[in-house]
Every structure is written in structure tokens, then in C-alpha cells.
Amino acid sequence: MAKFQVVDHPLVQHKLTIIRDKDTSTKDFREVTNEIAMLMAYEITRDLELEEVEIETPLVKCIQKQIAGKKMAVVPILRAGLGMVDGILKLVPAARVGHIGMYRDPETLQAVEYFAKFPQDIEERRVFVVDPMLATGVSAIAALNQLVNKYQVPESHITFCCLVAAPEGVKALQEAHPDVDIYTAALDEKLNEHGYILPGLGDAGDRIFGTK
Ligand code: URA
Image 1 (cartoon, rainbow, N blue to C red):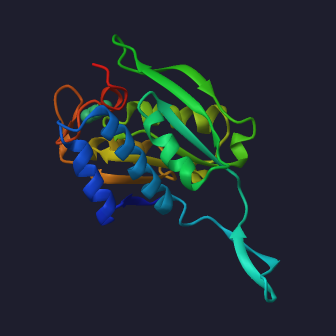
Image 2 (cartoon, rainbow, N blue to C red):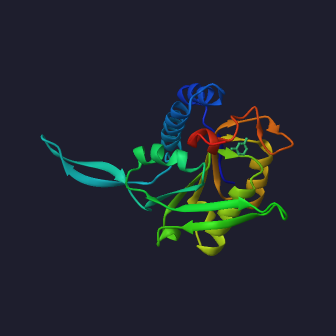
């Protein structure tokens, strides 16, 4: 069974309270969102494989460790996912960045992809899909469907990382993609009738970009 983890580090929880506050400015919201993403990158990369390498310090030759194995890719779900990319790249600056854009068809209520561009070897990479809010799970599931079915990324290579999750979204995502690890900074109470997470933080995209 894949992991489901709430990152309850005090710094993450403190910063999450700042971005939940409706009076936090766009500038601060954007900065603090990236700071939380950076702290979460520390957790979501915890199981990266290490290999031994011989180096020479100023004093002696010795065997030390370095990150081995798969290269990484960060895939923000447009548009709010963009708000987490810089924070994650601070810790893994060599990661490639793919993008996937989804909108919800107002008639079918299904997620429709309007943009997708990934590194050409995405199926060989560890992929971190990021979106600040996991609400109904519709766009996350659709994005993962594309990565798994069209681009042949094994579910076990994928980690979904969000800041706030609703129980409904977590359940839907776990049912659709049981081998994808999920990390969130908070598991909130529920969705309201408009699909917003309660208590949540409002529309993450609007708050990151200062739109309405
Ligand atoms: N998307 C958001 O930006 N906020 C929510 O509360 C739910 C979905």
C-alpha cells in the first residue's frame, strides 16, 4: 500500500496557518506557499536511494553517499501547482519540470486536459505531481491517468504532493491510483457544496496569482 502522510512539522503547520489567513497578501501567500513546498520536498524525497561514492577530503580518501538512481521530475497541475515549483526546485534544482493543464467541462463535469508537456524520458523518472489543493480529486486523478496510461509512468514512481487535502479527494485518489504516495500539509474537514475545502484557504490559484 502506498503512503499517505500528513507533514506535521511545526514549521509547515505555522506557515500553513499564515496562508490560510484571508488577510495574507498575495506576495506573502506566494512566498510562504513556496516555503512550505520546499519543506515538503524534504519529506517527499526521504526515500530516494543512495549509492556509495569515493571522494577525497582535504585529509583522506573515503567512501561517502550520494543520491543514486532515477532522475526526478516535478509536474505542477496548472495553474495553482505552479505556486509550489520554485520551492521544490530549491531542494532538487536539477529536476526537470513537466506541466499538465486541466479544466472541468461544465456539462460533463469531467476533467479535460488542455495542455501537457513532459520531459521525454518521464517514464524513467521519479515524478512529483504538485497541486496545492486536493479537493474532489478530479483533476489529480485525470493528471495521474495521463501520466500512467499515456506516458507509462509506473504508479510507484509517482508522489502526489499538496498543501491541503479533503478526505473525499484523498479517498478518490487512493481508489483510482492505489500505488501513488500522497503527502499533504493538512487533512481538512470536508468539501462545501461548491467543491471548496473547509476550512481550506480559498482558491489557491487566485491567491497565488492575485486574481479573482
Ligand atoms: N481548489 C482550490 O483552490 N481551493 C479549494 O478549496 C478547492 C479547490
